[in-house]
Image (tube, rainbow, N blue to C red):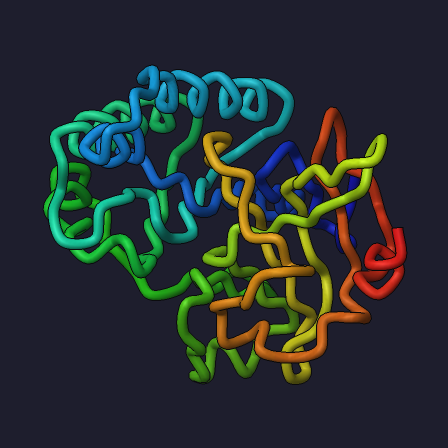
Length: 238
């Protein structure tokens, strides 16, 4: 399903058709190890799950460039052993299918550079291609590239929404489409299936671009496929 002309939602990622570019946000690789240190016993399946879902996307879409839009790793102040191994393996895997990899720095990626250097990849604050400005979304970047763009794509928020079903509420990952300043704004869900995300109807949002009235933002819920649920103000009534 298209969220905008030339931009398709494929699972939890975005695919820019003309640019043959795939955008993935908030993988948080290494989360399993971090949670195990707090007493949570979680099977180590995240990397394999990520590769399987990416493989399905690559096999059905021609991808020349993959943009990891921030928070590819989970830990703030260190690079855990799992993060080292998982990111190395993932970048090797992605390299089989596409020519170029872009790493955008998220707020969890404080120590991402040592890994990126092994693959001769520069860690960037944003990526501009055609009319699109891609940044993590934890801060506002107001430079000439941003000003000349028409559409901004961010992650960071782990967008999700709660819906009532059979007397109870269930939370689903979602894409949001609205505006920030004079730009169209797309908010991506986390590609990490271990977490549901931040319920935009109940939780305080952290991205400065989302410190606004979201009632007229469109909601696209990701389940067995992507569903257009209309505007936020209408979803609140469900």
